[in-house]
Length: 237
Image (tube, rainbow, N blue to C red; front, top):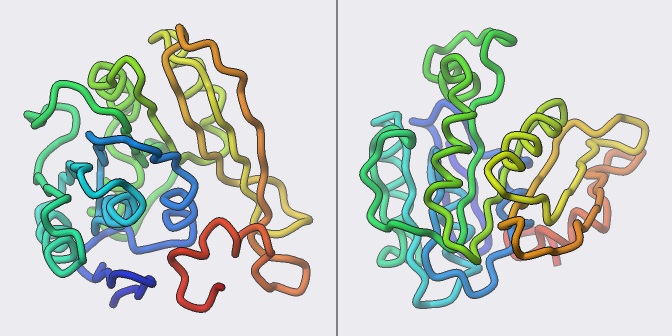
């Protein structure tokens, strides 16, 4: 199994969490700018690392951490087969205890396991990827805050129910919400996904609120979704 993007191909058959519309949307939405030191916490098959490699400067370096050994191997294979093998470094390990190559990062992206004690899964690997153990996602946020450069940004994708808790947790770490992006699957359905970006509270930046509907009432991708993901989907102009 795999997914063909415009500039790279992803295999994900060894990963508990497969390539999804949500991950492609998140990778396209993240503000990369001139970030040189980039960290992907919980990379899975490496999709975010590869998307950020495509969007970042030639001199940027991306470190991607993955707990599951099989997924980490596949992420490494995907990175080596991509146009940017020298930009991406895959590490197999726990993001909460890993020895990171950098002390500070300009951009940190994450899709932590949020669903502990709420959802069951037929696969133990998928359950760990989705749910983690206890409130492990809080530790992810704390670790990211510790590793963030003074002018850096943390980008998080989460179920909509987790928004207030995440904002509150990072506010306690002196980080403020800079961008918020609510995602609806169709016009008549309530938002199910939230994309959040945080900066140091000392930077005093007004929060930018946006929303997106993925498919219209006819089931077709909306112009907004095509616009934001056009650099990755083969059939979008």
